[in-house]
Image 1 (tube, one colour):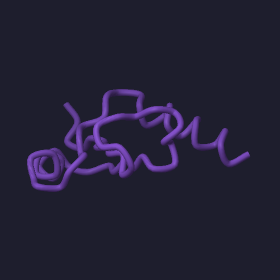
Image 2 (cartoon, rainbow, N blue to C red):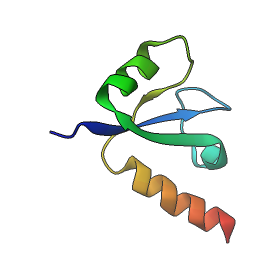
Image 3 (cartoon, rainbow, N blue to C red):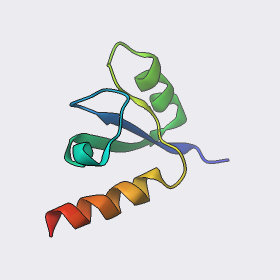
Image 4 (cartoon, rainbow, N blue to C red):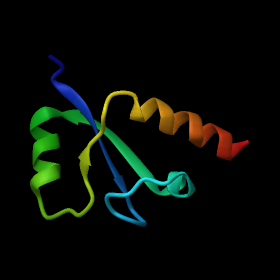
Length: 66
């Protein structure tokens, strides 16, 4: 089991991830303890990313830049 995971949030519309908001979505690679604290803290919008979501986000991000 991995000790580090990705967490994500959408700064514009919390807890929703449409393709139009790809520039507002943030990912962070943090330890499990930090991820738990981010998700359960008063910071709005953080949630654990599912497997492969970071790679999909990178691909969409590259398409928008070009």
